[in-house]
Image 1 (cartoon, rainbow, N blue to C red):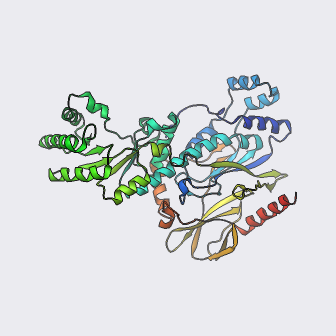
Image 2: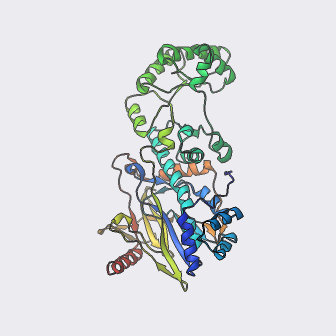
Image 3: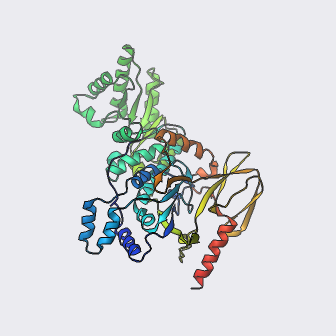
Length: 481
């Protein structure tokens, strides 16, 4: 995949630079630190989210460098010394990075990315990593909800013009494709990232001609293969569908077969039922009906329950902006540091229990039921700790430690893969097609109860006994301050 070639090093919160300078001044710049990127809750109170945005995060870390213009700008702030500016001028990314692959279902409070390296570097990348993962994971998650509501009918992403900026359109289209959309209206996303571009006409095309019928005829002659006509510019049932049928008959007489009509306004359920009957009566049962117009998973679910005769959907603003919940809520927190080769776990404590972090350098495991192939739970362990799936394994809910379960006949899979080794990228990003297919397969490992839109089953992210004991010890010490 191609990405937009820009140096985004300075796309950072300013406090990343003031902290970097502070670490440098206090002799802590090279102290090895571990940071986790994770999120606290699933958007729309859903059962799971989808990991996305890793490729763009990788691209960013590959190209970290400060230009002379950047150095001059920072010098002009009047708070950074020349020795620190010299450090930035010679900056070379040398961190280790692990991440859960794109397209994987992910859950609150588990690391989806871990960065290990000198404190200045591991801290500095926070802003951009969060931008990449927060945005695309949000859109991929929303897209998948909409795709599931469509019950196998194709869903096209139509939101470029309502996106939050041009990057929102481009990378939102990519994320929507990963989440299950069949294509996008965003041409540059197809050109640069392989997400198929789709589209037909706007209402202005119809209005440009002296009549709707003339507009339909002109379009059919331009695009005899895959002709889909927009039938709601004037009146769907009185002119739009009848004119489309007239043109479809003319096409058939030329040996061409039409593809569909699109309805972009009005009562989609009622209009689609009437249009389907009209098309069938005139000998066009294979002509598809596409619906658009401010759709989301709830509207799609409802109109299908009402018997709407829709074959595919175009979804715009409510997908590309995740209008119902437009913030993913990923955070980036210190988990550990190294001193004399020893890993020292760190914890953030808060009166808000949801903001208490899981300490230490960790690994993420997913446990699968061997008889069904379905995911049972995710387990966070200390790095290097193994889960032996040949023996019974006890898990417990870290929020309610009296809830314990002993598992047998299961398999344990590590979710995180090594992305950077000492600053060198050792991971080859899959194509958008491969990520999308992988996402479909991974979601199939989730129980249907987890996929409900309302009150989904809770999927547990548990701690190993060793990690739970470390966390409790740090909490005990914190309460004794």
